[in-house]
Image (cartoon, rainbow over the protein chains, first blue to last red):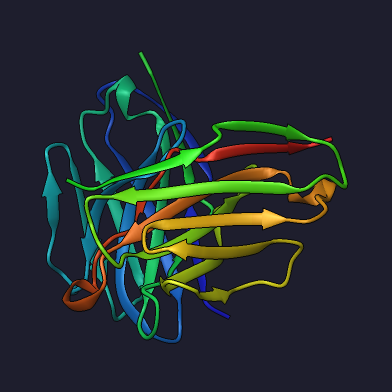
Length: 112
Length: 115
């Protein structure tokens, strides 16, 4: 069974802290790994990673993939209260339909 | 640009009543379409996906069905709701053809409470 596991399940930090969110996966047909941010409603796309060791960066957020060890991390530096959200990791499967398998998410709360 | 619309935003239905949730996409043609459900504290579970009109693939056995009567319209239905159908339902789309390795883009979801 295809599986994506995220850790921690939740964490609380103070503004300005740096956080690292983890995602490991076991799937039969890996195509890419994606990170989403979900605040109240629609998950919004952050990154797609297909190659090991190449960091993707957008402002204070960055992510990297290790296809040998089957995991990815999402880093957020200098956190702000607006970073409070659920962060979802998903693996896109090869084959028909471009399907995503999601982890349970990490709930991040940034306190001012 | 492409947009996805999903309605209603919230719905409270009694057990045994029917369900119809609708999703439409604008600004693209022949998209892949998806229905996901998100239970409290859990990740998104894929329910159905469609790669074209009238083509529906079901991922999990359940009390729900999906239909795609038009290219950019995706409907989630049930004849008789169960308490376990409560949850947050998300519709999503992605491009097809040469854009197969593309992220999914989600609608704002429908929060369904079955009482």
